[in-house]
Image (cartoon, rainbow, N blue to C red):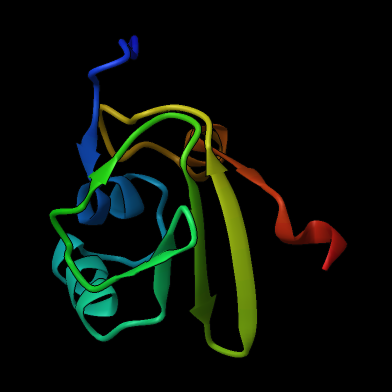
Length: 93
């Protein structure tokens, strides 16, 4: 998907494309349960607008993950394709 400055995607959809959880509803529930920050701002809205360059911080299990959005998705593809949607900034934590 080619991103334009006004391009955005729902947070829960993008998380599903990035293969964070098995279903979109599980992604939405994880956001609603809290623990997600979008550009340092807490969010519990699955419909939050996610854009290329945004930084997403969240806890998953006992890990804190920090991802920069590299691309907006257009499908839920294989894991190799999903990893191209983000840059993992938490590797140095």
